[in-house]
Image 1 (tube, helix red, strand yellow):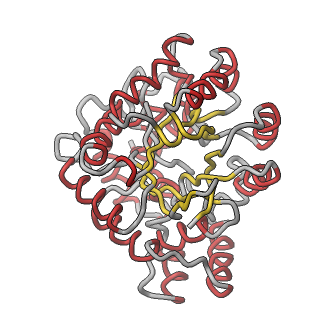
Image 2 (image 1 turned 90 degrees about the vertical axis):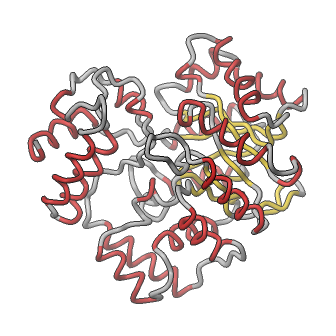
Amino acid sequence: MSDWFGQKIPKLGFGLMRLPKQADGSIDLEQTKKMVDLFIDAGLTYFDTAYIYDGGKSEEAARECLVNRHPRKSFTLASKLMAGIAENEAAAKQEFYTSLERTGAGYLDYYLLHALDRGNYKKYDEYHLWDFVKELKEKGLIKHYGFSFHGDPALLEELLTAHSDVEFIQLQINYADWENESIASRECYEIARRHKKSIVVMEPVKGGALANPSEEITGIFKDYHPDMSPASWAIRYAAGMEGILTVLSGMSNLEQMEDNLSYMKNFEPLNEEEEAVIKKVQEALKNVKTIQCTGCHYCTKGCPVQIPIPEIIKARNILIKDMNRWGANEEYKKAVSQEGASKASACVACGQCETMCPQHLPVIKILADTAAVLE
C-alpha cells in the first residue's frame, strides 16, 4: 500500500479504458460488474477513467458497474480533461461537468489534465485549466489534481516548475520503456521524484504487449517461475518503485482480473533474483525492434478514411517479432475487414494520427511500409 496524505492506497488500480466488449462492440456491463466486485472484494479501491475513453461509454460504465452498486466511500475514482479535443475554453471546462454527470459520482477523488505533450500543453494555459482544477478542489468537486504526461523530460521539468502545486502525475512506466529514448520513462520518473511528486503508473504492460511477449521473453520468465504470468512481472516491476501511488491495469476480462489479483492483493516487490530476471529480459528486448504502439486509439478518432491503425500495427508487429507472415496476414485481414475500415494504403497522409499519438510514432510511414508488405 502507498501512504499518501494519510490515505492507504493499494498498489493496483483498475483502468477502465479497455473494458470487456460484446460482439456488437458495446461494453459487456455484466462482466465488468463481476470484475469490479472482485476488485473491491480484494480490498482495492482505485478506478481510472477519462472523458475521452470509449466516447464517454467508460464513464457511463463506471456509473452503472461501480457508483450505483457500491458505497461511495468504498472506492476512489479518477477522470481526466483533454484540452486538445475542445473547441474553446468553455467546452474544455464542460468536460469536467459532463464527466461528473456520466459517472454520477458526486465528486472525483483524482482529476487529471490529460495527455500533456509538446503539441497541446499550451492549450491548458490558454484555457486557464490549471486555475480551473484549483477552483474545483476549493468547491469540493475534486479531492486531488494532477496531470498525465506523454511529453519529453525537458517539458516535464518545465511543467512541474511552473505548476509546483500539482499533487501527483501520471507517467508511462514499464521495464521495456525504462531506457526508451522516445518515452524516457526513467528520466521522467527521476524528474517527478526530484520534484517530490507521487506517481500513478500507466501502460505498465504497454497496452498488453508485455502481457503477451515473444517466446524468447516468455521463456526467460518461465525458466525462473513457470506459474508467474508475464503481466505479473511487468506490474510488480512498476509497483515496487519509490513514490508510486498505484499502477493502472486496463483489464479486459475476468481472467486478467483474477491473474492480477493473485499477486497484487497482497503485493510483494520484486526480490533481487527477480530484478536480475528483468534485467535479462531488458537486454533481450534490445534486439527486438517492434513498433511501440499501446493501442490507445487516439490516432483513429479523427482519421478521415477510418484506418484501424493500432490493429494494423498489431499485425505488422506479428511479422516483425515472430516472423510469422501467415499470422500477420490473418491479423491484417481481420483488422481491415471491420465495418467501415480502410486498408493501410488508403492513408492520405493528413498527419492527424501523428499529432495525437502519445508514443510519437511515425504513423504515416508505418502505414506505407505495412501496405507494402501485407497488401
